Image (cartoon, rainbow, N blue to C red; front, side, top):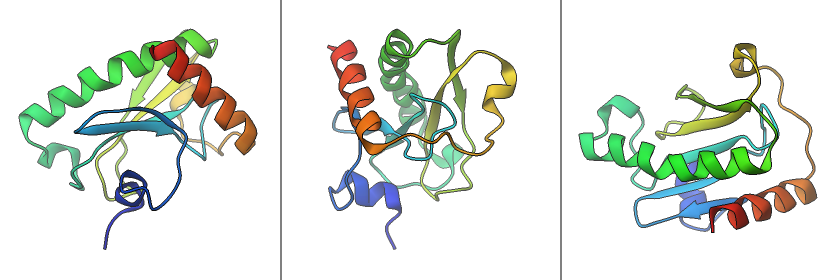
Length: 130
């Protein structure tokens, strides 16, 4: 059964897309730990990040870098934290989370953010990527 991320990649489920190429997609998390929390997902569905081929691991970080910089340009924070949890969805993904302290990466209760705010934020980040 395809993961929710595969359904997003295939256009079966909408997302707040930030960036996309032939191998990866980045979009805002709809249950964010902070405003601007985004996910970077390879289009090929592989559950465990360390089962990915070497080139996918390196290309995923290179794809994530401009997305992280764009989020940082839009969302006030000290930096963008990177987390790989991998238990909540069986599809490799990186969490890019605006942080101001280490505890901001604790995966506490999600931040309440409206769909309208998510759309505005996604538009601002996409514009920053340009």
